[in-house]
Length: 285
Image (spheres, rainbow, N blue to C red):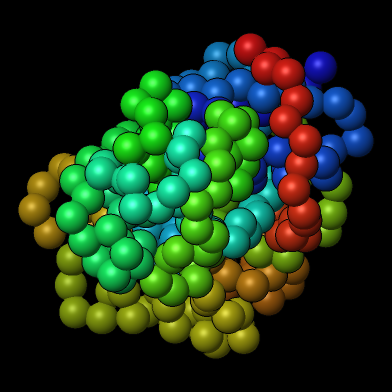
């Protein structure tokens, strides 16, 4: 059975993304929840999983730095991406909103529901947790005076009641990427991700980016991260529309490469379609 590692525990948006990816595969897949993004990549590198699904970007909070740092040091390649709509719900074992005295969730989820909490639970103690799923699991043991902010997936898995739906201040989406060592997925590659570094000097970054403009390649995202060697030394992560092997993309890479110290193609991959709710399968770990 194909195994898919993801950032656990069960009931997270990462599991939802992993389940959606599993539906796109032509073979059955088991889920392998792991505690950290680095553990997910290590499972694939060591052959304990065939793929891993990890978050890379949220439309409100920006880049997931742990994933970018991972991409800088791994030999795994991106083979697919998928987008998950993030909807937060207030979950509890009880059924009355005015009984809630404590609200638990991941700091990002708490921040994205700030207006709702201020208006409806202004006196509740807010408790950050490592994940929305951990919050749901803890609320099960805490009783009707506690609530978690989490997904419908978590509500189903932990058998919690939904006290309020879609309580996020603004709609958001999280982009997930699928990493593999030598696997592939159905679909035509339509995006490519790159990593490069440049020499320090006037116009260095401009000349790299100009190579893509000259060949008509649309750069859809650019992000920088410290290279962790010395102050002022950065790595640049770029997504572009098009697949490696296309004449215009190959031409841009050829012209950009001499302007870089290092240029690495992280993968060319399809964007998987959005889908509905998936059933929770048995663990593949």
